[in-house]
Amino acid sequence: MGDLFVLKDVLFPNSVGMVLDRLTEVGGVVVAEAHSAVPELRCPDCATASHRVHSRYGRRLAEYPVGGRRVVVKSEGRRFFCDAPDCGRRTFVEQVEGLTTRYARAGPGVKTLWRSVALTAGGRPGMRLCRSLAVPTGRARLLGQLHAPDVPAHSPRVLGVDDFAFRRSRTYGTILLDVETSTPIDLLADRTSETLAAWLTAHPGAEIVCRDRDSGYSRAIKEAAPDATEVADRWHMLQNLSAAIERTCHQHRACLHKYALDDVDAPPSATAPPTALLPLAPPLDNIPATPLMQRVTDRHAEIHRLREATWTISTIARRFGLDRKTVRRYLTTDLDVLIASARDRRPRQLDPYRPYIQQRFTDGCTNAAQL
Image: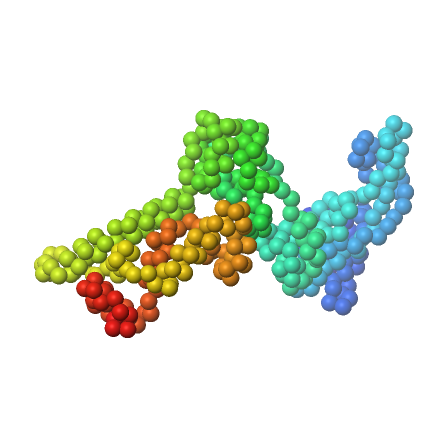
């Protein structure tokens, strides 16, 4: 009996009033049989003490594994009478503190473990992981341990707004974050301006709103939080900056190529390091039309025509046999940039000879075989 008392404190340190009767192993599963030794309980409604037992029934609970083996607790649950005449509850069920809760088939420690696994791995992967951890469960019960946190009544000082995909290219929602703590605070069912405006109206207090470049979000902020300062998030700022630099370089590639050649022809300075030749091609206006350029031009026009006809990106991708990212690039990139990018796709073994080939082309040799 003394050994069982010590094991009880080791296996179930947080339980109060539980007595461990027997500990056995059946088929690799450790079975702990226990009962409650509390003589009386108080009604949860009227707090009247009761010692009259109405009935008993068996309970089976999953607990933390021991030595890589499953642990199951078999306990005897008791139902008590409530003797208070003015109480509407006639009977109530006993709960062992630190071990059992209403309708539970697992201890609080196992539920905490399941919740951590569900947050980390999700449903089916988490189910396989729990099987390896000797606390098996189904994916539905695993995901049932996840509960949405309470949404604060007021918006954080710096609010982050961005969209995310429930199902990519199909259904999108909006995620709201506290930028200063990098903590998600709420999810919205869609990414419309009306939904965000309603949320901002119900949760005032945002002083700075960090958002992407969606005009719908801007309309919602101006409507529901006109005093808030709008800023673009870092990712979109860098993306727009890189796109502007690339577009400017392509627009001025002729003069950049000219200055690069002048730097190469000039005698080396004793202080300045030598400048490498930029792999820039001559202007598009001086290049005769090729099948590749014509194909890119026709595809660019057709994709834009279908998009204006309200075709989705996925439908256009299936129509041309392209990836959705390629279709999106055709929709967001200028035609001259696409043509220059397609023209610059050369085999890497030609890289050492590229300055010579560019010079020959500038001098008037346009025959591919001769080049």
